[in-house]
Length: 365
Picture (cartoon, rainbow, N blue to C red):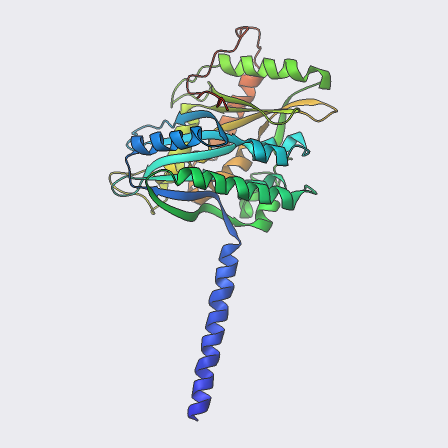
């Protein structure tokens, strides 16, 4: 009897170990669109200074940085826009439509009680799972994404603090990211479109006009004026990044969008919300900036922006159903503002686009 009891206990223990192991394996297959990589022991200013020094010494290229704006600002949040030449080389034969995967974003932000400073990143592997899902080189590109992710972690490790690896919401499986076309019943709001179908064409032209269209878009965006948190109609050009020879990425932002995204994501969250740090949504800093792409696919030159409901679900689904229900018009407002800006005449723009005020030198490396 005693022997049977021991065997039963052993069987339960084995079953429990299997369940725990299975759950852990399943958890390992979940990827946050953001990943926290460092808990800093320094102030915000000292953390950003140390990170910028480490970036300057790395092989990564820093294109721009931006301190996010939102009303009642009591927490600091900054996003860095970077690229990796090694990652770009790995993707040199990919379709120009996939350019967004190559734009890497690092966030530094104050979070939780005591406003502790953290560093996170727009997870390169999760982004590769979205944008390279249909590529015959998917495995190679995913490996390259993980390699550049480690490179960013190595850069962040030079900042005083504790290295961590925390997948941040929204968290999804690789299979879900490969086919991402919205979340749950809200797929309807994203019109059941994947990333490529969500690239909405604003302007089309002939392939031979690629350079002139890039110039036109740059002038148009550079001449636009950010009008503050209460007005969605103006934009700020942060970066212009060639991705291969047939795609140019423009990173744009405005106070209105940053304010809405941070506050909406913070409304119904409890983790990380504190009296001295009421906006946990600052950890979504690497969702910024918005993208405008100029693409030459050999048949047409296309100026595209993403369907903002698709994009908002990709980055902000953890805001919750209530937040989306309360703010159903915001994606449309942002989309319409970008569309209107891009289709306005460029004739009033200056001959040479001025340097964006928030832009960092595009890494003289």
